[in-house]
Each structure stands twice: as structure tokens, then as C-alpha cells.
Image 1: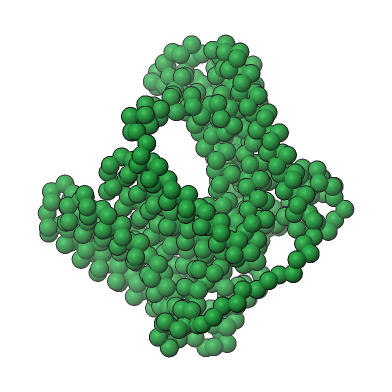
Image 2: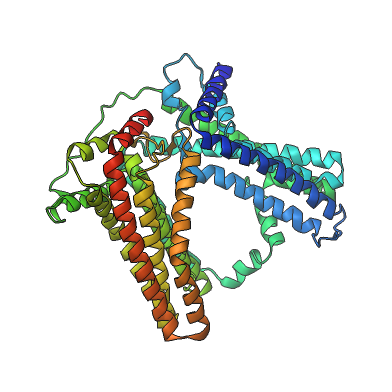
Length: 531
């Protein structure tokens, strides 16, 4: 039965490659990256010795070992939290879909764990493991074998951690109310981190994480770093360290397996509780906006941002980034870098507009049957995104104004407007051309449809490129303002953002509206195929 699950996963991948040429391109690029990681590993092995010597490239093997531990730990954390915070999890094979078959718990667990590796994340992670093992080839085949074993243990921990996180959240966030609870917990954790980091002694933190080696020493005794420290323990002859790393790795795998088994058992039981709706009073945003077509589109989009978990997840992440910058500012005493986090947050919200039509799915029929003009639809969605991004940008600029020169803050304001305008303009056009196979609303915010990776990356890359092109003059003038304090440069940054950003918005709304008018039926047909 495990073989049948894996065969189904391979069949789904093959279908995606046949239906979407872009998937084939991404797989070829990923395979080239795997080969590049292995070659880079052998290059590092050739530039370092086994006794702490430094090769011709200036790389010390102590530093390389510490960097490997930190990189491996980052891989595990990305596997565990990436689907929750960023790109979602593949929903092609889930416990709910396998529940109706005569499968035992261990068969479901083995099938889902192995199928998780059969994909682009698994391919790239396997390439990292091979490259990590290759970095220890200079110390002997035995050491490289131990490193390979540690890498495979780390990959096993990563897969198990991802399944525990996703299935644990599925029990809580399977409804919209549960999603709001999880989002509140995430935001609450970030908010609590601000006073905690502000109260910690800076000398203690700088001493603990002042270098790569000291940071890796701390991480190496944790479940996310222990597997990657096996090879270095063998090289230095630290038997006790080797045993500790093995014990921590094995203990983490055993604990995660037990937790996941309990979660799988709970999710395999059919739910007997009937779904409960939530009664809402009033018109919500529809009672606030003007009684026009554009106002209705704006209210509908804002309602989706708050009630649709696929939107609310992006909203939580967009709000958490400025709060993270504020927490780091409280730690370092320098709040000006927080603007960079705000720029990324604004870009994230604006670029997500490229998936608006894809998220509508078959509900897009309401736009067609209501004879809504494409320009009104584009403008209504744009206003809704502006309602979300503008307050975040203004608060960030106000905090930065406490430390930065007012002229620099003014110039940064030009960057924020230009980035938002460029990404929104691109989104208004791209959403009428590309339909991404996004997860359904009822599948939850942590799901991802098969084959959605490549189109999502291309869409976000296009929005980012558009934002950078529009914001390029403002970025240059902001650097000049910061270096010289010139009011002319600061004013030029705002003027360039207003002219280029305004022009981009006008072109994007008009072009996107015309494309939507011409391609509405084609878009709906594509949405039906991906429904």
C-alpha cells in the first residue's frame, strides 16, 4: 500500500510535467542546482584540511563545519515552518483523501513521509545533503559517510517536523475561526518578543552569537543542529560529542514520530460533529464603501483578506515582518533598518494581487454575469490593497522618523509608494493572464495544489521586478539623500515615485481592465480546469 501511495505521487508529478512546460523547466533548473551543490561541496573539501588548516581560498575547516551546522539547521526550520509562513504544503495527498482506503496508521505515515520527499523541496534538500557530505570528502571516505548519515537523519527530522506542524495545525485551523486563533497566537508571539528582546542584556546576546562558531556550538546540541555535527565530532575525535549528537538526533526522530502518530490517528477518525456556521450582523465593509461597482469590489476584496485563510495568512506574515524589524530595533537600538522589513511587507501584499482571480476560482462567474467592467474590477482590488499597505507604511515611517533625518524618511516614503505601485500595476495585468492552481478555501491556508510552485514563483518574480524598476530612481535618490542630506534629492525621490508609480498604476489598471474584458471567458475556463 505504501508503494501505491508513492506511485500515485509519481503519477501526479508526471501529469504536472505533461500539462505545464514551466514545471519541466523548473525541474531541470533544480537538477542543475543539485549538481552545483555537490560540486561546491567538493570544492570546499579541496580548500580545507582535516586539521584546521586553511587552503588557498582562505576557508578554515572549523568555519566550514560551523557554517554547515547552521545551514543544516536552517534547512530543518524551513521544512517545518515554510509551508505555514510562506509557500504552503502539497494537498494532492492528504490524510483526508487516504482515510477511505483500508490503510493502517503506519502505512499512511510511511506513504506521506516518503511522498513529501518526492518533489522539488525533496530534490533540493537531497542535493544539499549530498553537498554537505562532499564537504567532508577531504577528511576521508569514512567521515564523508558519517556526514551523509547525519544529513539523512537531518532530512528525516525535517520531514517529520513538517508533518507534525501541518497536521497539528490542521486540527486547530481546519475552520476559519481556528485559523484566526492560530494567526492571533503568531502575532501575539511576535508582540511578546519585542519587550523580551528589549530587556535581555545585549552583552550576553552578542557574546553568545558573536561569531559563526559560537552560534553553531549552541545549535549543535539542539535537534535541528545535532545531525549536522556528527562529522565534525568524528574528525576531532570527540566521542562524547558524537554520542550526544546521535542521542539528540535519535531522540528527536522518536519523539516526532510518536507525536505524528498521535496526530494521524486523530485525523483518520471521521468527524461526527456537524459544521457550524458563524452568524454575522451588518453589512461589514459593504456598509462602509460607496454604493458603486468599484466600492463593491473593494469591499469584497477586503472581506476576503480578513475571512479567507489564504489571504489572512499573507496578512499575518505582512504584519509580522514590521513587528520583527521593531523587535530587532529594540534589541540593537537602531530602528531605521525596520523600513527594509516594511518594504518587503508592502511588496508581499501588493504582489499577492496577482493571485486574486485564481483565489476567486468558480466564484469569478459573478464578475462575468454581472457585466463588471474590467477597469472597475482592477481599480476596486487596487484600492483594497492600498487600504492594507498604507497604514503599515505610515506607522513604519513614523517610527523611523524618531531616529532618521526627516529628509531621509521622506525619501524612503517615495520608495514605499514606488514599490507598492509597481507591484500592484504588474498584479493587475498578470492576474488576467496567468491562473495559478491555488488551494481551495476549505483546504486551509497551509495547503498547496500540485504544480503551483513554478507559476507562483514566476508571478511573484514578475511583480518584484516591476516594483524594482519603478522604484529604482527613488532608491538611488534616497541613497544620495542619506549621504548628502540634500533636500533636492529627497524631493526628487518623492517626485520620481509619484510620476513613475502613478504612470505604472494607470497603465496597469487600463491594460489589465482591457485584458479582463477580452479574456474573461478564457479565464473562467482555466479556473474550471483548476477547480
